[in-house]
Image (cartoon, rainbow, N blue to C red; front, side, top):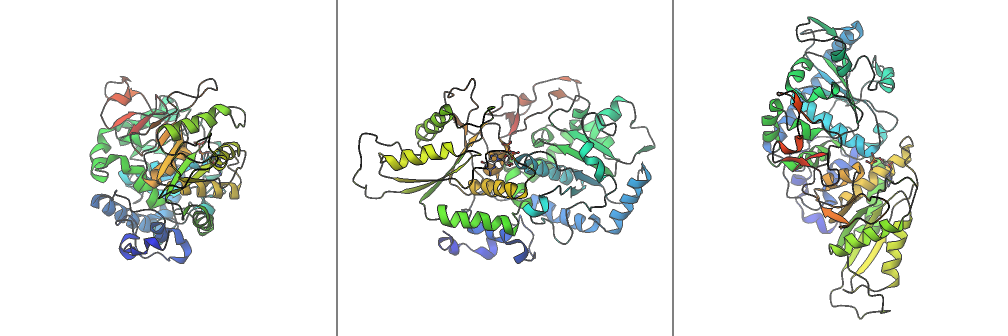
Length: 479
Ligand code: GDP
């Protein structure tokens, strides 16, 4: 519990090994420096190179961020309609609000990494909830795009067909390396339905062209970091930033995403009431992508087969009504998250109605059952964030295949989860789950293209540290 952790040298560790900048107002964002009280000490330290890169980024953001003279100048250029190379001293990448919360957290981290690699300033389209969910991550200057940003009204309409997209500009011969005058911004369509031209974003020659633009605007629902690793122009820098490759989202996520005070209250009250007292915390994230709402018997069976088969939870003895308590019975708290109630109810009853063979006591808890995804509702998203965060505070984690909600939890928590396989034909998969190779999220829609040879390749077989994912055979993840 919090008291037990008081011995940690808080003053030293509250900055997470130098990951966080010092000097923020603590009251305005309690989670920033309090997270250390809830997360057990993790072995993954940020590299000194990453730490210095972040401090440099913070300086850049201070100098170029919203409403600075440099920003105002760049906005003037944007309004003028053409990009005159060399007239502005700061370059920007704008992240557009799009998709579910788990996706958004992953894409924002991806775009921030791209900003670090290309020395651009990240600006965030706040949508209807970003400001309520998260604290500001950078000192002094906001990361939010000012409300009066000239092309903000167009964000919603940007899609694969947009004439301003990089893919379509290329297709229509609207940009070439030789051109003196370029459009005033490029829209990067990196969402799941992007085409081969859009995917050229992941080629070095195209990056050289994109470098000339002051303004890039990105819409994506994918964690595209694994493909950055396959680009020679970024590879060396990425290796220096992340000598331990599987910690990219772990560090960037804890650097960027500090729950707002409202969400932090939701997290910490729940933690103290239901999780703090246990000897061990087991998180189980249940996300079923079948058509109906569920609950499904085959998923209930899968959860038991995985947690018992992998010895994450003990079996129950259905023949006995009570057992003599063992000498040191452990109390395990299971934190289950799901849109529906049924999986929780099933597991709670199993451990209530029967004793465990080990004598351990299993308490099962589920914070909410929202029934449906409602990404436009503010309190709904606060609860979703709180639940991802609570899952990240567990000692042992089980997640669902395909779900970015689970990826966020595993990454923030530095946990290699057991992944419940996606079922085919409503049957329990066998085996029911597999331990993840790394804590990194999976890139669900990567390109399969060799930029040099200009032909298709299996990008999951190019380097040993970028492989196909456990849960999506065509996806890519860093291991
Ligand atoms: P993904 O669809 O699983 O990749 O995750 P996203 O977070 O992008 O989108 C799913 C959304 O559905 C979440 O953001 C929540 O709004 C909602 N949701 C899904 N599962 C849960 C859950 O276990 N708890 C809560 N509170 N919301 C959930």
